[in-house]
Amino acid sequence: MRFKPSMYLLLIFLLALSGGCSQKESPPPTAEKKAAAQPSPSGKTDTAPAKPAYGDAMVEGSIGDATNLIPFLSSDSSSHGIAGLVYNGLIKYDKDLNMIGDLAESWDVSPDGLTITFHLRKNVKWQDGKPFTAEDVMATYRVIIDPKTPTPYAGDFQQVKTAEILDPYTFRVTYGQPFAPGLNSWGAAILPAHVISGTDITKSPLIRQPMGTGPYRLKEWITGQKIVLTSNHDYFEGRPYIDQYVYRIIPDMATMFLELKSGGVDQMGLTPLQYERQTNTPLFQDNYRKYRYLSFSYTYLGFNLLDPRFQDKRVRQAIAHAIDKQELIDGVLLGLGKEATGPFKPGTWVYNPNVKKYPYDPEKAKQLLAEAGWKQTNAEGVLVKDGVPFEFTIITNQGNALREKTGVIIQPS
Image (tube, rainbow, N blue to C red; front, top):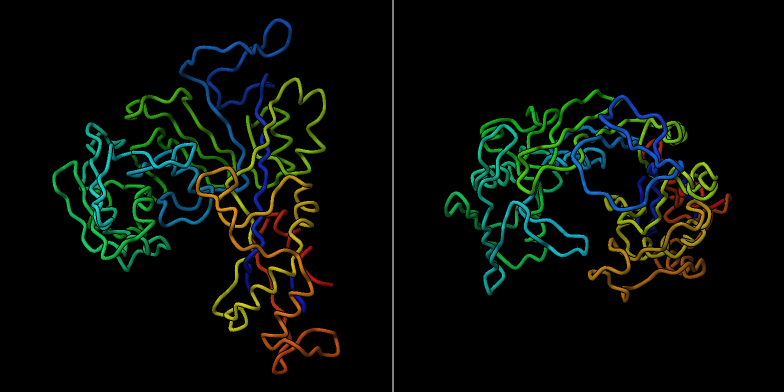
């Protein structure tokens, strides 16, 4: 079998431990800041709890720029990160993964599980001052299910049989059959009806100039350089304490790390190498806080099921057995990771420890491939079937060094 460095195939799920640095005692402040933290006379940051105060700015380094700030039209994490500070859904998750109200104060689910009635918050305003109502929820729903809308998120909403506005603050949906992700899907961002109704969503000004109900509003977006958000003083959950949130676009992690050390950014995600070997100096211990936690992100190999080879379950299972996940964790993440068996991390109520696992077992992989008809080898030692060698290419996004290294390691010699 040979892998070339047609698709980012399935099942190495790796949950990476996130590393982050933020300043305890800031180097010289950036021009974005309105105020700088002051060290104590001893030169150390005072650890006594302080009363929250409004003001200042948080500058975060981002390796990628946003592309489209309408969440259901975008697929990159930068766009979703920015949009998540501007928009709200009807529901959201708390820190323990329990669903709680966001734009909806509460909801009722019918005994048969088919109907959800949302009771919306009153006195919520869009950032142009217009009131939020059930009309906005209906307009967003209609745009998402519109066949002309190029979104991968339509499937969940297409399960809705009927959607109704019962009054300005009550919205009801009924499903044709029980649909487990139904409630969760309404965590999607709600857009303003008075902006999107009767327009081509792919040409909407919201792509570059979002207007939501959330805690922050867009102030400035210089493509490839920075995105600046300012706090929404009329936010329904209260004015945010941090007045500005600045995303600086720095597409190189080494450069971003230098910016962190010089005070150009306040926080960033660290590479395993930076976390383990480049931040254990007295300078960092005295001036920065470094965190490590099991994140909700994972790296996986996804199969192109339009390829006939990967339509055979045994081939997919064979590749899962052929990849040494621990080798990837140790070699790429320097041990800062954990093998995943699904999208949820251990310790959360949705995690299932009993799902079927695919341990590293090269002999099992060969057996499964043989059962799928990949028995013979050519002169180069590559498996063949009907004269076609078993070769495929792994594709990943440019600039992601961890994924590039993963692709190299899983490529058989």
